[in-house]
Image 1 (cartoon, rainbow, N blue to C red):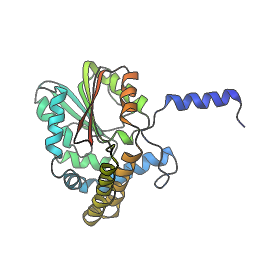
Image 2: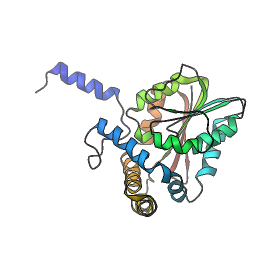
Image 3: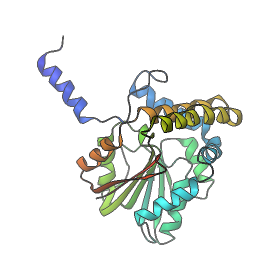
Image 4: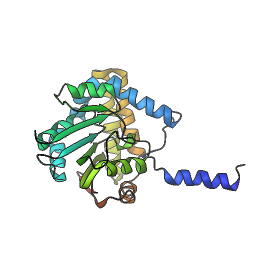
Length: 257
């Protein structure tokens, strides 16, 4: 049985870390295995990811991302960072807003995803993780993360890094999928994302793509609630923290340094 001091230390460590979801035992046994496994899912499925995403979003993914970026106020001359950029869809649209006077940079842990992003003509791509951003303080005007918050290790550390690299009055946008509160809506979304999308992904992308899409839903289902995300942003020092919902499913978390 642990001593009282050790027990307090372990409780303090737990209190200091906010995982977006627990390690899902049907996929991974511990946090290190989870990080490695998720990166491998994306590496092996990268060349199929764009068309799967288009099917999953009924072709509206590009339009929605552009609208969300507009709400950040991203403009020509801004320095823009897209964390967990994946195949570079959001980065590409952000580069249009920032223009030739600005900078649009994509960062992702998956080399496979970065290879796909490079095919979109994006010149500024780096491999890295949200929890350890390889940039100086106050480097960017706008920072985004699209549908990847569920894959970080710790919300507190991630948001502290985001705030560190943002310039004063810099804006953050986090896109996520939030299950509907109604039972009918929840079941409908689960059937679609947990069963139909993985089935289509398997037909066109093989078993790895199917596993990734199943994992996609399972992390959504077990993700912390929106209030926890917003509170973690406030604790990190962000202000004007808000959440915009679209179609009861898509969440945009917006905040200012």
